[in-house]
Image 1 (tube, rainbow, N blue to C red):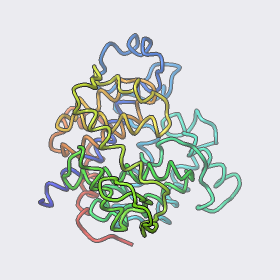
Image 2: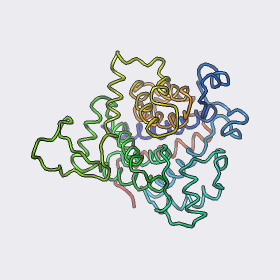
Image 3: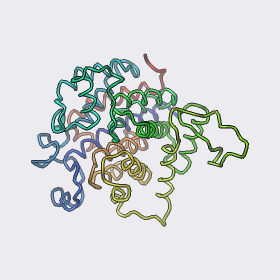
Image 4: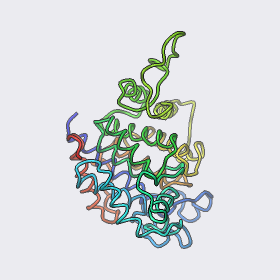
Length: 363
């Protein structure tokens, strides 16, 4: 695989996340789909203004809300430091984000601050706790929404990827299940950046990384998930996370995509199958499904994510990164890039990070 192709996919993953974030801005958090269709029509195709009285009402179509703000912080840190520098990232959070917050939900960049960031703000600003004692128990996807940049940066270095994502996610979320699913998503994204397919074989490739100690998951089963034999010792593959199940979900979902006996039509209804709420266990299967269903069509993948309602912004961020990693930046429709506020700046950040992917880690 040539560096140019990998870098195109790496930049596609980053821009896919930004595009998904901005597409979800207007129709964010409609759990009543009739209300969503009444406000935005039968099919959302582009960036839209938030309606008065709803989330992000002070923003305009094509702008980013808080997840995009934090992802930009992460990208600038990675690009300027040449790799993940936790002290630098934390400094940026202290200096560039936290002064804009007051601990309430409807506040801060984008007009809304998520639970995990509010909890980190309270521990860091009000309680004066050091970073490392700032994580809470939110079961949502905010950590993925920024650490997907780490997955891209360390796409060819699974051990470094898992370490960086786990450490950064723990700054705001400490639940082991959430952390394991966050690292698993990053591992999936990294394989897509490398050029692997989101198919029935992907989880096997992830499990191979577990068995060689490169991903920190415990695995008690053997090849092809065969059970251990009587008398076998506990395999020497114990890892940071108790179960590798988060690594198995992508191939299970992609197998369902390929099975004609499991139709989900139209594809946006995957949000009804896996659930519309914010929790990570609702969001990830839906994102994997849409990315596997539309591996060569970025537009369809991300628009079905947005049109599914509920926490569609997170779903579109996660789907957009996976879809962009599969198609590459070069295959993302130009209108999505042109419609983003500061689109040229964001593309340059994505390209700068992509240029680091095949280079050794930084500090």
